[in-house]
Length: 348
Image (cartoon, rainbow, N blue to C red; front, side):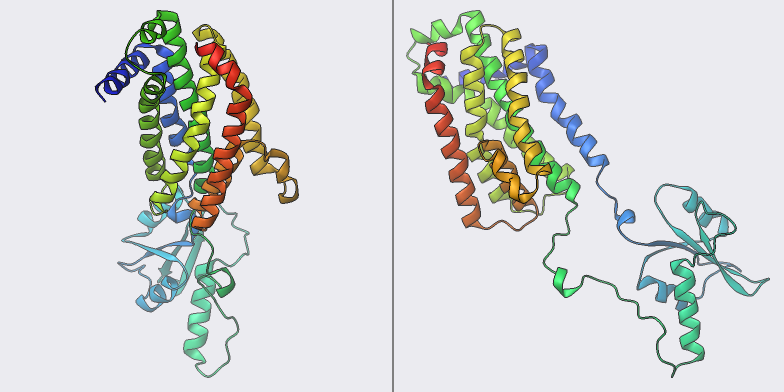
């Protein structure tokens, strides 16, 4: 255990000393921040109406209650405050009472004066007073809100978060593979691998030690991604089960990269080439129609992306996770057997 801890600390110091090592660890945070900017805000998912609630231009409380059934109502003390909201970010309508004209005025942001489209507020006000003056008349319009029964089982999570989160974790596997591969190449360049051969550290201990730091980075970025992308409500156990299983893909990536490369420049070049190949499977999973998905079944990363999207949409079953996990490990094992001689030769 002491030797594993020492190897972990050595890899940590080596990665932080190297520009590429630090760059690889920091870049994912910027990717998450960019993804977060594309998530829809609460205001973009429902109608927003800014109403004047105080003073001579105040909207009647009955109207506010009627509007509140269909939209997110925000109250302001004056017309100026209401207009400031309309000029700001987001999409909203305005509503206030005009005492001179004895009528309500509905304001649509950035519209022409000749616009004849009725706003949501105008329609609600018209129906409210029609019902008030004609209580026995049949409804002209029926407003419905909420989720229809046939869509009650749909996820409430933004597709940007579910798809972006799945792609991000798949991308992190490639980044983790880079970390493992660069650490192995660094050991080659500094002669550390030759020193380990004459030490009591076994090959198994060496590779386990090389995996600790990358695995911790992967685990840390997983929880950060869930927090930033607002996916923290998903099944955490299912998420980390897939992360641990898919770590085998990153380990194979790193071993191949470290075995074939003689120096850091070769490792980076080879890693970029291999990354482009495996990323094609993720693009296939997102862009290809269902009847053409088989084209990318060869890639373990496709199955990682597929199962993570199910987890993030909260529709994954344990049976589905078990099947996909078996496919991920199975495909990775097949590729390891095919490349075993090359890996052993490059690391010996």
